[in-house]
Length: 399
Image (cartoon, rainbow, N blue to C red; front, side, top):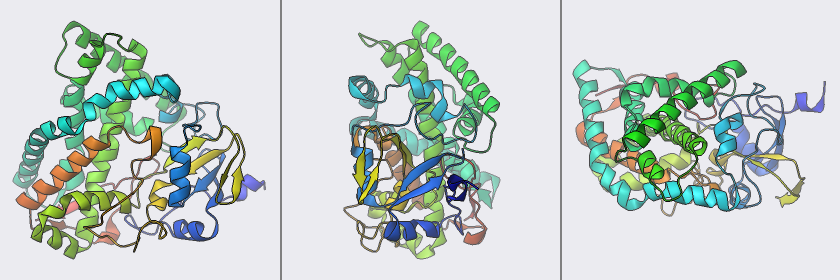
């Protein structure tokens, strides 16, 4: 048996859907730079301490591995979001990356997010009303957590929300580590690319009040290839992660009923509660990978050039050296320097939108369904397996 075969397999298996794997705390205290085996069978260096994860994510020398660099995350030879044409097309470093982020970032300002709040609240109310009309118990993920972010990102990109089931399938396949074959991944990417190419062509003929139309109207517009990659990237990032986080946030608050009661008594805690839910998310997925292009020292260990570093933001967010009572959910925690959205030049571009959606969902749920509760024991909640991002299979609720 080779040394790689004997390495612990990452991501680790937790005992419960909302609880962290025991390995996180053990590695933070004893082995902050750990060698692990990924789903692909390749080896990586896993970082679990807050300072170390922040250091690597913030270092402009290191970026997401390109196909052919270091370890592969997927168990398929090709395909998936990390081996996709989208991943190769969107610039990952230097001036090109800055220009791309500036072009997209104009759509994620605080002013724009505040302008979106009434529409997001109206969508949330409609989805809740439809769920209540059908009667309980209901699956909050299918009824609210899943459709809301699709509506929002479809509206932002000028895409018909009637196509959201297709987006869901393509997202799932492209975010897969172990659930789909390489052929299925390549097929999904090709279908998604064809769809987005047609959508962009239609926007060129008939522009709307959406992000893609605005990008097409720029004095120096992106190439069609980059526009397609951008549209795909925003749909995947703006849908799957937020949909799962809405569900997990509500599950965390209902799993310990006094937390929900505290929010009902003081809704002004919604903003800090959202940040704390993001910090305490134990089911966040695999984290972010970085390709080490030159030797770097982390926690007394030298990571040699060519290493793939897996940065576990979720493990770092429970670091006792960074957060007092790190394992406790403190709804008023402030400041809260969590790393749920990454750090540095590659921090999540859409985090203002994700925060806005999470805050609005919580505000509306507290107002419309104060009696909301879990319809099953918390130990019966099941994790989504085999995806790069974490989530719950469903969230049965009653009211």
